[in-house]
Amino acid sequence: MPKKIVLAYSGGLDTSIIIPWLKETYPGCEVIAMIGDLGQQEDLEAARKKALATGAGSAYVEDLREEFITGYIWPTLRAGAVYEHKYLLGTSFARPLLAQRQVQLAKQLGADAVAHGCTGKGNDQVRFELAAKALAPELQIIAPWREWDIVSREEAIAYAQAHNIPVEQTKKNIYSRDRNIWHLSHEGGVLEDPANAPDEAMWQWITSPANAPAQATTVEIGFLGGTPVSVNGKNVAPIALLDQLNEIAAANGVGRMDIVENRLVGIKSRGAYETPGGTLLVTAHRELESLALDRETAHYQQLLSLRYAEMVYYGMWFTPLREALDAFFTSAQRRVTGTVSLTLCKGIVNVASRHSPYSLYRTNLASFTMTGYNPKDAEGFINLFALPITVPREPAPTEPKKIPQKANA
Image 1 (tube, helix red, strand yellow):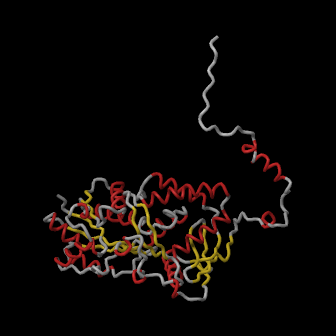
Image 2 (cartoon, rainbow, N blue to C red; image 1 turned 135 degrees about the vertical axis):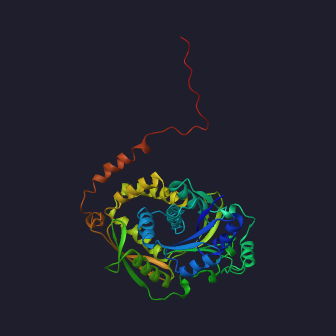
Image 3 (tube, helix red, strand yellow; image 1 turned 90 degrees about the vertical axis):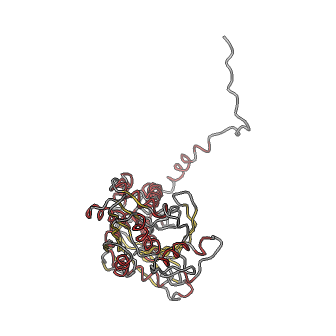
């Protein structure tokens, strides 16, 4: 029976009802709410007071924004990690950081358990619990969605109403959302049927491309060793940089995305994501790499980027392999320095220019003037490259040939 529990608390529907449930299920236990500030643009002081009003013995608001960007977002960006072609991992890499601070607080306050509000069929339960097991395996993990009798968000709303707990969700506004400085996710409601288009009213951050300005906006992003450092020629600190790009992209309708993804637990799910500044950064970073990375490194990096994205999505942040991959990408990104200008117009992003002091692009080699190398050399190269396919071969048999038997001596 746990005596002191640190709950990863957001003030949303799930965690709002977990506090009274924990106190009912574990009589006499103290519940401590840990609220992580990841730039979600919410009244976190109100969330702290709400936690206390619903039964928490204490509540802490932890400012994790800078650590989130520099320790989680930037490494994932340098790795070029995108899950299943589209998802920029906004929720995935937020969970390990929240879990890390939750564990630190539990140790600091002498708690013997941690709890989270993740459902029993989602990815986040894995992300929170893998982090807790890696950092403090001695702590008990409590996952109410795997223990209580509540089976739907409608029932969760009814539980909140029965306990006089105010929540924003209603049966008409049923979406499950997660927001931070990188993205805003939407799940549930009409999205549960992949045949349904998202409701326009669902989107909360990015302007509809149809209503975005007709005049194009150009923004220049500067990188140093694969890390974003400037906007429009001015060096900017990480939080301000992302805030600025979010504002520019959102106003121009850039960064909406709708995906049917494969969850780690084996279920396909449908989600909609708003990632304004992140869309600009991923696009610009990829374009700068096209100038500064040699072919072999670029192609091999693509293989590792896929693995890195899977590991982040699967919650495997605190693992030796992820740390080792970081070392590779840190080395590979040393020359990914320069600027990329993007043109934004009604939800569309186009590349205007790329510049790098380490550019491997050579005009004399790429030009149609055929200077910089001897074109006659290509003939020998092609002959050697084609050698495996020019060796005479017999037609493929319709069935395997029998091995000839040696005659008896």
